Image 1 (cartoon, one colour):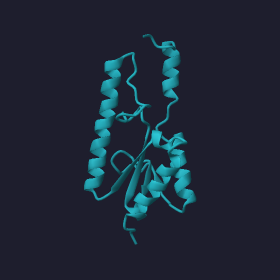
Image 2 (spheres, one colour):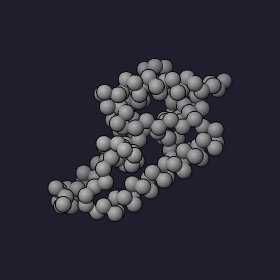
Image 3 (cartoon, one colour):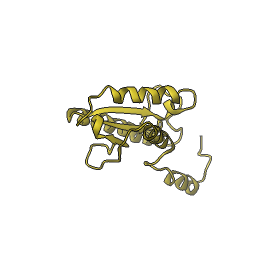
Length: 143
């Protein structure tokens, strides 16, 4: 099956995809901020540059897109039908890197929370965000 776009159009579309300040990330950020949580963004000194860092709760949050991070058994994650092998390699390398980053962060004592894009869809968003607060509040606060 051929791509529905010409190569130039596809290239432009892909170049517009941002890794920061995505819609799912903004949902989490606005929710946490409105509930009194303060955080830093994209901390370069931590493995994987977590989307949000909450030092007071010794926690980091990654807001993952289901496609780009190969969310297992998710309806939003499908390997493209063109250049399948290339995409498999790329997406599964992303997943492996994510796993290494989580392991390293946990070894350094961080509580790592992953919020998936699909968990922020209207039917599950409220429950996901409520659960996020619970996970943060379970952590002992730093002075």
